[in-house]
Length: 108
Image 1 (cartoon, rainbow, N blue to C red):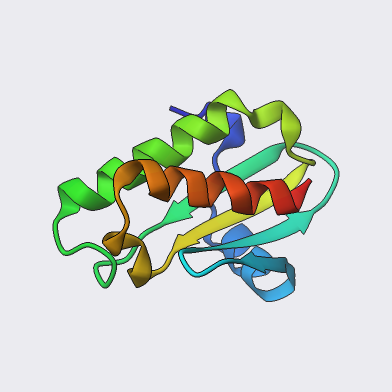
Image 2 (image 1 turned 30 degrees about the horizontal axis):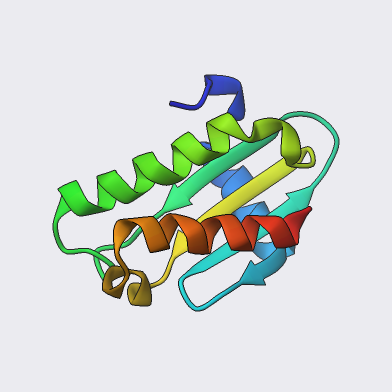
């Protein structure tokens, strides 16, 4: 689990990152990155269009957050919004994470 300081939770911060953030994407994930000095904060969004079952959505969120926690030092400071696209459900779990890791490499 990410530390509280690394969670992007305020609605105003999320809206600002969506409006002014830089977009990185692949067929399975989209990342909005708003670089600014301070903490590195993340939020993961997976809608019911991606997975109908909450357990599947939560599993993917846990996988992504665990990767973020382990590789926090490799990100620039700022706010990040990670959004999963509906195509991700056709991938096996290992390929989901690999696709996300490849997209994170574009951020650096």
